Image 1 (cartoon, helix red, strand yellow):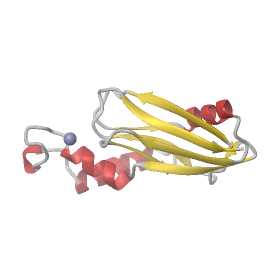
Image 2: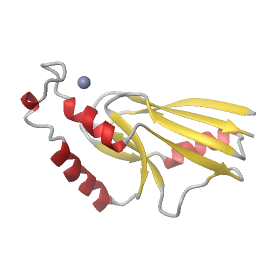
Image 3: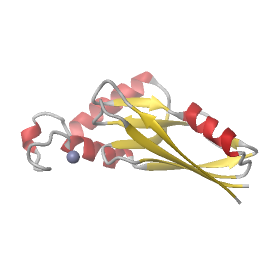
Image 4: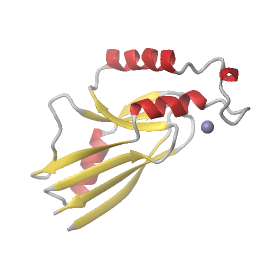
Length: 138
Ligand code: ZN
């Protein structure tokens, strides 16, 4: 069995952002040489997510509005997380959008649904963060 590991780095200029990271994962898969197996991608930070959905700008704005309703950033004084820190909302947004995805690899390709793309979700950006890509298979 082959095993591959890589850390991808992301830094967004804004506090929140969604980045289609499918091309980077495809590159990892190519590097791994795995033809049949599984890819795991997980955010290595508790204020960022990896999730699968549509690469559609309107939907991403809808997520932004929905997440702000669930866990508004302001006022930061409403939260008790490490009093003085301002990212409690980011922890909650991460929780709802998820930590990781697992994608099947078939005939050397990511076996995604038609509109499925892999995203990095940032909720407390403006600093460097990592995503782990682990690929196992034959
Ligand atoms: Zn925190």
